[in-house]
Length: 326
Image (tube, rainbow, N blue to C red; front, side, top):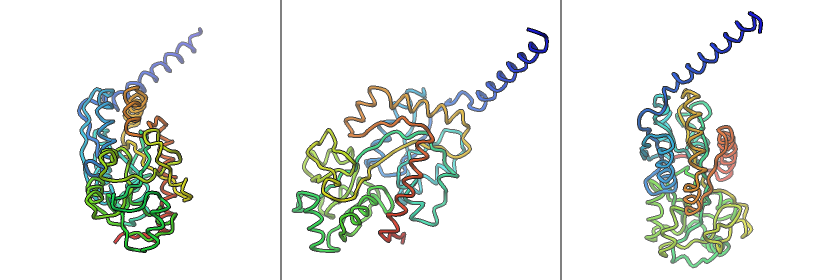
């Protein structure tokens, strides 16, 4: 090797070493202290249930405790805005879902953040079907019977949700469009009080995440008619999909982790790798099966693409249904 090549090689090695040191310094050996993740929904709802199942395992992989904090309001807007306003250091994360990421920005022109500008999608973690539930006193035993019942008394039946703009609200709006029925929406401050209202008979029906609805389905407090995905679930194979009843309806819950824009890429990479490892573990896959959910281990870009696709989808539903924020 001649002198010039030796000098060039030494220079390249020095540059690589400097770059590696800069990356390490930028991430600071992240994480060095507990991480807070914001679940922008009420305790006991599908978002909260999924978040609290995954975060302890993710914390084990990262070697730090992850504290789940619920910040409720405005279909996830309040919790999401809170994360956007935190220092972009990876110590305050968002457990995101369709409400604040794909629905609210299309529903509320005063949304104080722009997802593409203010948040970095790190990784999607899971998808889960919605289930259509009715109070036991509702005489309908199938989706078609429910639609016929609603058509026979337009505007008299109602459905609950965890707030205007959340995914389970929009599922109800999509059902109204698909089935051609008039059903009144009754929003509550979270999915948990919404299903409590259903169990008490305050409302006739609702859509909910299957994991959050399971205990109430099993004790007979609510009756499930169908699931909203494109296939039946292994846990309840007798439950048809809404599409099987002849309605153009396919939607479900999806969840992922995001950080505030400006978070250093090495931290994003560390989190993404840890999330993939967590969701690929046999224990987590078994847990997801029990929750009738499917773990997801795709790229950050795939998660960003999903958010963009869903945003366009719900923009059409909102316009078709004529939904407005009062």
